[in-house]
Amino acid sequence: MAVSKKKPEENSELELRKVKALEKISNSLEDISMWLEDIDKDEWSNRIQHYLSEFLIIASGKKNGNINE
Image (cartoon, rainbow, N blue to C red):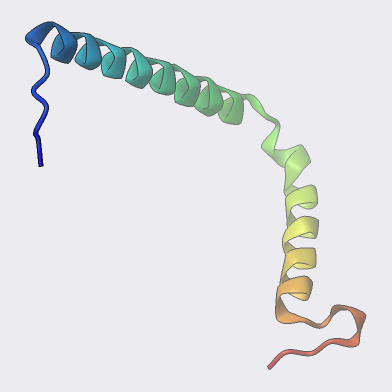
């Protein structure tokens, strides 16, 4: 099996692309965390509680007469 060796220029270009991709991911995560800090958690509390209770009902199979034990 032949092993291909990359040129140092190709390796440095690849590393540069990796760094740029990680910076974009970092910026996206920062934007998401800023958005999560800015939402009104008191307003969402009841809504989240409702959706979690619905999820629990569906996950336990109690909805539509299906009971999974």
